[in-house]
Image (cartoon, rainbow, N blue to C red; front, top):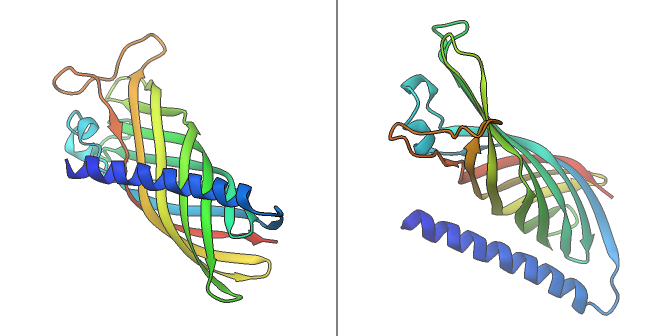
Length: 222
């Protein structure tokens, strides 16, 4: 119940960010682009995909995912809109075998971004940021001892995030930290032949990569 409330609150905050961004932009008397940003975020997400982990041996349990990507933002006064690409992945393997058990989970999330930015001074700033995934191809690759790789592709992946950002700018360079909550769930995982990924109880697996995240952002602002 607590997790559901957090997700609902995160989705509501994301919606408010988007609504506030567009209302702020459209209500301005003269729309003027104040800055462009090109950024490269790099970070980690704490995840607990219990449905997936329950069907895997202890050596293949996943507890975090790596996250890197790229942002392109346009600031209109204090509001920003743009696009974000996230590559979110985790790999675990049994080191006892050169060709032993191994699992790979990967999601490529293409999102719309909205941001509200507050300048502290000429160098520092704070911001609230939200994203909504619009195209999210995701796969789970699984290999067992003596068995070739099997790829399961998600037919239904949903993603969004809300976070806070703080950074420094030295024209044109930008360094920032972003922390928040990411919702990412991969459902309907099947092979190209329609074979579903099942857990130990024989039910379809939903891979839940939701959790808190932290990113370091390097970029240019001009």
